[in-house]
Length: 66
Image (cartoon, rainbow, N blue to C red; front, side, top):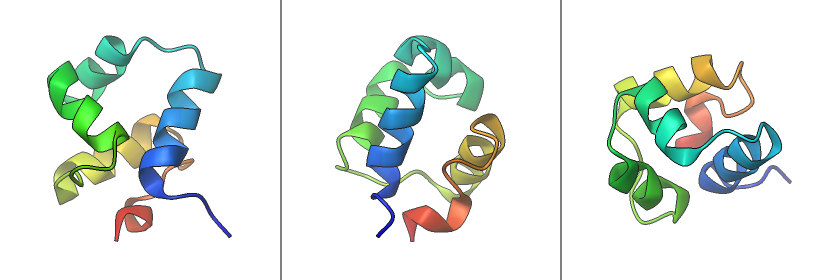
C-alpha cells in the first residue's frame, strides 16, 4: 500500500535533505502552508499538487492527494 501523499512528501524532503523552507519556495508557498500539508491537515490546491509532482520527479504524484 502506498503511503499517504503527505507522508510521501515528508519522506522525500527528509531523504533529499532539503530544508522545508527551501522546498516551500520551490513550490511557491510559505513554510507554514507546507507544514499544514506535511501534517495532513490540508491538501494542496491542484496547481501546487502539479508543482510538487514536478519538483519531486514524480515521487509524490498529483493523484496521490486525491
